[in-house]
Length: 343
Ligand code: SAH
Image 1 (cartoon, rainbow, N blue to C red):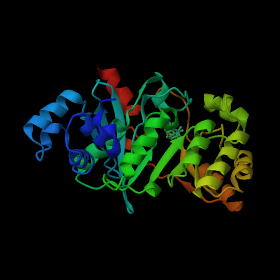
Image 2: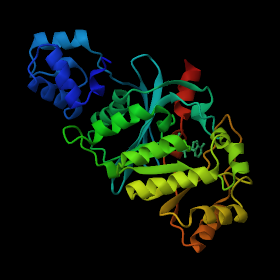
Image 3: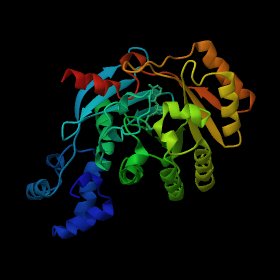
């Protein structure tokens, strides 16, 4: 590995040793990368020109190029389309909330999970992102907005648990007190339900929030929406969620995209309630975001409200996700698809 931004401080110290440099150089470089958010070695003005040259030769320094920015005129949400070093594209979405700024980042270029309603997966997986490339999204948007990001949600393009090791390294670097020092509690990782990795994550005992994309109350319905449901049953998923809570003490989030006529009935709400009512959790209802290539339809507002009320009758904590950036291709992967169609 010679991707310098993906090294931990300890690893960087070993690298400096290898290059015959003083160990304190590692601290300086780390601070330039992860606190001062330098975009290249040449910005590291406390290093000698000779050392900067040497670093250029030894390492790659990932950087993102903003290709497009769309700002919602409704709520100020900004969607960024970034080009990676190899020309591939990812999206990040910046949202302003009263409790601070939140950034939704991508973890892969494309996705191989194949969810029927999702635009990110249509052309499959191109590759996973490096830890540095996930950090770069946070760093670039911080620089572009000039505002601190307090919450990071890994809910953009890709399945984060299908890029498990890089995800863990990303979290370690992002929460490092010598970096941006974002609190683990302010990080959410969303998964379509890779049970093995959910359990591995639980064993890490991090204080991050795990969000599970459930979207259906029965295996039969879930299989219609999510191929991963052929691999793991809802029962196995719920057990893994229980395990996550047991190990971390963190309340889980269940995401449930409502699709008209498919998973939005009273019976669906009743079964869903039965699944989650004994877990310490929160249910997030999301009226499905219409994607051009797909023909899923949102339920009427009154049906969404009825679904919510029904869950609440069981004492379940539930919110309807406020739709942000509806006017700017809010749904996962749509901006990337549009840009690629133009190229
Ligand atoms: N792969 C991860 C994270 C990325 S998707 C996961 O599956 O959780 C983030 C969330 O958006 C998931 O809950 C996903 O199911 C949902 N999603 C994707 N496309 C959507 C759409 N068109 N409408 C509503 N939700 C969508």
